[in-house]
Length: 354
Image 1 (cartoon, rainbow, N blue to C red):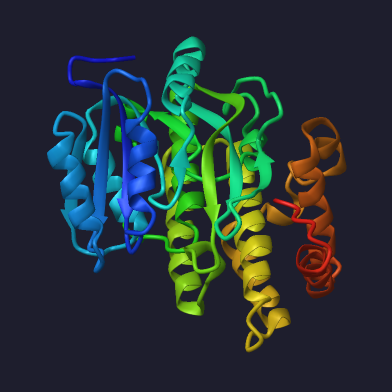
Image 2 (spheres, helix red, strand yellow):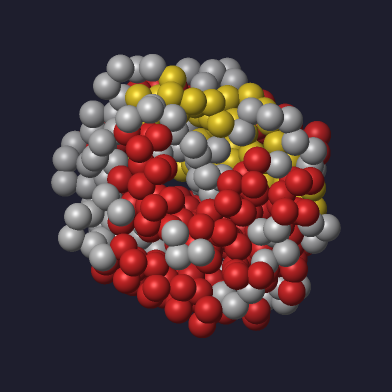
């Protein structure tokens, strides 16, 4: 709900770092939309290329819409929150500076959020190959009913954790106590965890739009394709801090179990998959170490009520895939499981998203 402090309807935050090649297309896709009450907050995260000059040029040409936050390089996590602090909109959205928004992105999301009184509204998106311009896949296009996190916490495990295909109420983001340890590879995961904790605490709703409203660019050198050991250690510290936030924030046992399942999915499966591409990594040792970490800090991951046949049967394919991966993990067959998965992607061209 709008308050007197809101001077804009929607704030779209665009963090920028080494993306001068893509940034104009991103900004143009936002400015071309027929929408009243927009502000675009371009956050220059100490980028050494021409991002700041591009942002300043757009700010000069569109002074009523574009605002620039120029800060030292501290990573995407802090860049996004710097944008949130500067935002004046009733709603807040995020677009990565190498992606673009579809023409009805703003109006569709804001209208859906109004109609459902949702604190978070999730839309579908396209994964687009940079080299060819072809659509690789369309994600989250199935119709889903709105839900309250309090009623079924496990539902949050089945929603993608990208920050950029969601609309957030500004007052919800303002209520979040930001953790001190900045995640690197899993910044989207931790962000969404804290958001869903706030949704739980306020008893509010998550709603969905099955339309593809964002074009997500898939490129070889994007952040998501690279991960290092030191990065994972930082992410682990962030996940532990997020766990503390859940406990201190009054999370129910069901919500804690959902968090445990999310950590297994993203730290266990996704990060192990990415590490499997490094020939110098001992994958079996990584899996053993990850298992110990999960046991110590996210204790219900191995017997989660949300990673069962019964739950998967009633909640869809995302949970069936998670159950299959969990069984492979417990059977010490994860290296073989990941090899098959890589073969399906690299040789057969079948990209199964988690």
